[in-house]
Image 1 (tube, each protein chain N blue to C red):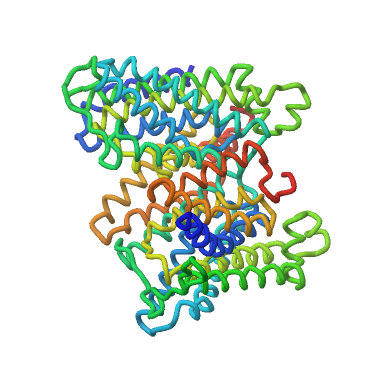
Image 2: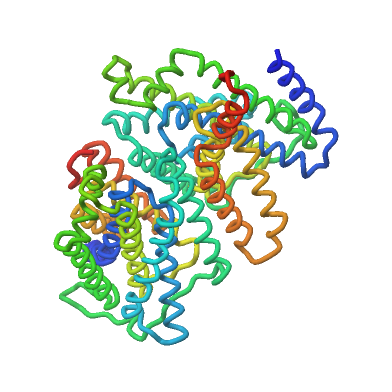
Length: 287
Length: 320
């Protein structure tokens, strides 16, 4: 029994950072209707940047999210400004192709720079734990959860309370309307992609203290983000958040109940169930 | 008349071509035809009906594994087994289609549903002892045409060419049929076609099943061309991407699109492999990614539509 409770707790904690990652995807899709197939690869770049800062300068990964977040922000903004903005009126499938190309480049440049072997950021506190009753908590997972929550909250406040945030939401709700009131839509697009990318870049750094990674890790997280966003409900902030926690827990439980290599199947089955019974997602409001 | 002449000339060249070129080129041509065929199959659903699928690797793998297992366990010729695989693939597509189309899942949702379905298949296949799991499934080579096994490349060349011709023929017929018109109507404006009384659910299901069945037939070809099947290659997302990108690059929803796209991407792939494969790991694929991005930026409507547009401008007054 305690094995399952333990799995749920661990999954919940990892789920927090999944949520942050999915929020980035949801933002990018919500504003530009672009499916970011390079989402996981942008995350892996955040991870490697944290790793590099850690081994060369000893910067703690929880501190380096400032650097990785900004760097991946620039990467995302550059992809939007330099590539996606150029083909806005092309058929929808061309945008998919473009992002697949970007994903291939990011993954394989990472492979060229760092090689295929898994890397790990071995902080001094990597194995620290504490007990709360019968449940053991990994310190890095708790810290990651807390920071991911704080960043998600920050994003929420940014979108709700600032002018820039309002502009992004306006472009997402009604693009023509936003254009009519004089929004510089291309600028908003660039900003939105940057912010979405920064979310996933920071999420990557936050995961490095407990997760070994390699260039091919990206694809897994791209697919996981897709899954979460559909489960939670497209375009719903809270949906992406709850979806992340749910997928985190279901993967963790799946690894205990089935075999670890089958853990993802639980979240896919969850996805199919959602599509069967609530196709707009848990918290989505229709399409 | 000119068109028929061109077609005949192209046919003659294609018949003699494999005897003139070296073996590596034969390989390249086989891959080109065979991906053009798969692209044609994908085109029915993704191009004509406008329902982008990123999970065609699942149908491909069902075709490959079904015929391979039927041949090795029950001594049924792959020439027959491939149709069993096609039927199974059509069945799976109807299941996924029911899930997705019932609520009118479109665009992004449908893409992700197909991707998830293929991933579920990959995870299951990895854990099925019958399919060899992580080790993969080896097919014993016994040169016997009835077992879909041939000595040398030339027979495969003609089979792949035959597949492509048949697949293109089916799409050509589809294009001129009522069904094809319904599919294009659904792609252009699903709500409007539904309002006009088109049973969109039904026609999307038909397109999906047809596309899946044809893809599965291609899977059998792959099984007996490679003699080795592994879930992490045949069922990987990257394989679904491989099937999807050729018709998109060439021009989705056109009959020549998958063919032109397949030629172009095979050339680009071969270019990056030839000149950059000797470098660092990942370099050639990164170059391929850059080339893909360049193609999208410069031909954002696809190769065939761009060419057709240029031709029309050259010869005013002649609409094609």
